[in-house]
Length: 282
Length: 282
DNA sequence: CATGAGCGATACCGTGACGGTATCGCCGCA
DNA sequence: TGCGGCGATACCGTCACGGTATCGCTCATG
View 1: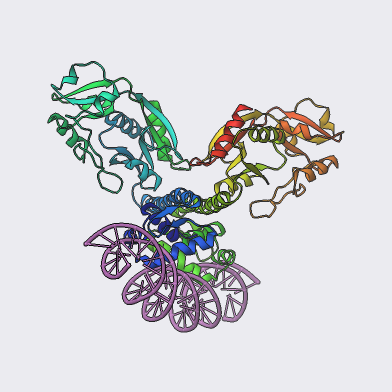
View 2: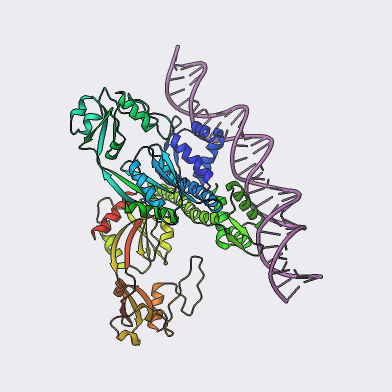
């Protein structure tokens, strides 16, 4: 099976619409229809049910979507890593570490410091990512190692080491009634009419519907909280970034967040191994 | 990058010879040369160093070989799993369990028995494999779950659960001088002039050079041992298959063998999960 | 009930990517 | 100095892939 066929199928399976999928792929609809039915013929299996008004996945289609995404990621990763290996061999070698912008900054600073002090350490390019983006960078080979957060990020298929487990706090504007409390329940903050939860962009760049403000960055969000427009639920360590206008209140029943360092299981990079070892010594 | 290009590159990188690689791929040498140099141009990186007398891998080439193999496996796995999902949706669903022929037979029997007794269990197709073959079946999606043996099999990239850890014994012909001993050192049996270790076929079907007999199956090997032509070093549980003409002697310093059940980390199969749970309850 | 719009499939056509044959250029070796 | 081995290049044919036009079906709408 060619990656072109897989890309085509994944596009249709995600859009569930040949026209839109074709547009996304930058080709016309007829060749896409043909490519898919040819793929189905070669597999000897129906992947999509065309219901003349809607397209749905068959069982086999759902499996191919799931496995196909992983396969496309692996191909892309091979390409990126080879390219980066060539650059490393030519110039100064480096590793790319993906981390969520604004999260675990203290831990990250200690990690980078500890690693840089090691003999044989190389430059670390830190990629500051939006929520969930680190995972994609790591799966597609644009990053070599990442700081992820269980249970928010999907760790399946990665090797990981746990670095830190912490509770979560609500970040509220100073002076808000809830700031007098010493502890909150999750249900008390998820549905406040005066402080709706912010909306993060989806992977496709669009925002989900809802009353909350559209978030682009952490610093922007903190400002919005100061203005009394929203609130945020984040791991405990974010307290270090608080200003006078922000108050953190622990949420008793929020799930614990574990910060982990993750890397692809077949990584052979000396630098990645050293980074992980440095992280474990913190 | 297309899988065709990756297949071509992997073939050349493994053979380190354009002519042989082309032959293996079933195409002529010139289009292969062209495809590779085009790939190099698109990556913007040299993958191979043509030394007019020999071909060697660059740093980037070594990375692409390693990552590319994994990517090709993933694509093949997507294809196989989709095909099998279609069959399962049509007829009776089943899982394929890969296991080394002649190993862990007792444990396997118990596992199959325990799983079959579960509600909602499906047929289990047991694939009996040559040494190391289970891993490939699992990586390429021809199997859903496998019984592997640490440290012999490469477990990177799989989720695993340990089932059993045991020492190793030497299987010797009855009457051999060493059978009087209660314990042996590994070094005492690996280089016996009268009992050379057997040779297993490589992945490409050829046999390595050496004095030992060429092995095709376990039963055949046991017969060769009875005839005093070779010996075998295997996990302790193989004792259950001994006959009168065979004697097992523990090897004190042989590495412990851990039998594990392994599956792809992104498996969503209910049957695989049930099998693993059944295995853990043994 | 007729009409139109939306959507996937089909028919048909052009082009360029891929593969094959012939040959070159380079190097090591007898 | 010729020969053999190997990868690169030149040149050519074909078929796979993509584009345009259109069909056939179904549902929404007046």
